[in-house]
Image 1 (cartoon, rainbow, N blue to C red):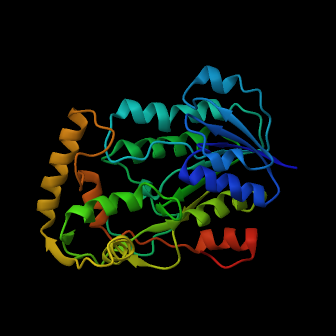
Image 2 (image 1 turned 60 degrees about the vertical axis):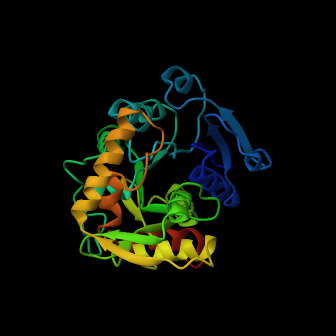
Image 3 (image 1 turned 30 degrees about the vertical axis):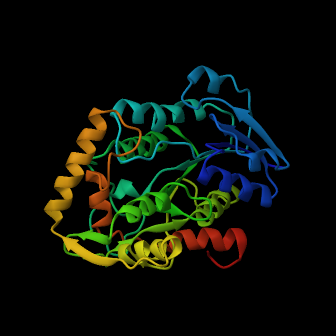
Length: 313
């Protein structure tokens, strides 16, 4: 039985990754920081390790030897200090790389390409040179570190992860729609730009797929659903699910209005050191929802087909 260390195993993505490894016959060491999901404790062939991935002493004293290290843990926010992101999203790969293994699977983000209009971009698209948010900044830094220091790795770049059990992406839209009579868009696309959804099951299948086969070693893979969804379409799906009796009209505001609102939200949130934004959109989020983030899913499809021979989610 092959073994894997999954960091962030108590989170939305991490728990799905653990279950996908188990369904493929792996033994899983599940690293959880604080909250251990009940579902995780009920799974067979799992050893739960509670600890802090940012602690060099803790990580170097785990005493593990595994086939794969799947580094899922990380901080994904619109706001926050650079020092915090460096501690959580960069430093741990140095400690994890020292664990005896055959391959390092690293979960990055499609944000490393930058937030601007794309048309069927793929993994050969150059990474953003000057990201204006610490989240992609340290993901790019981590990717570069792996290329220079790790003999065998695969980089996974999920877009906006969603699916059953999501308490982040969907909840954020729900909270906005709860108080707004409108679905609000900014700029030229008027809500018809692609919203880059990545079903969490496709993320998990890709991670396990590249663990099983060497075809994609030392490469990057973008995770995005084959079906294209507009940002307006996504908002309306969420609205229909949670507010079926509420009729939402669409309004489009100039992009500069969104940038101004985003600047205020981001600046105040960071000054107050808030965990979550004061209100939406943040400066980073307004660029996200107003850009055509259209990426190719072909490489992901090849991995999943090889792994499962089943239809994509």
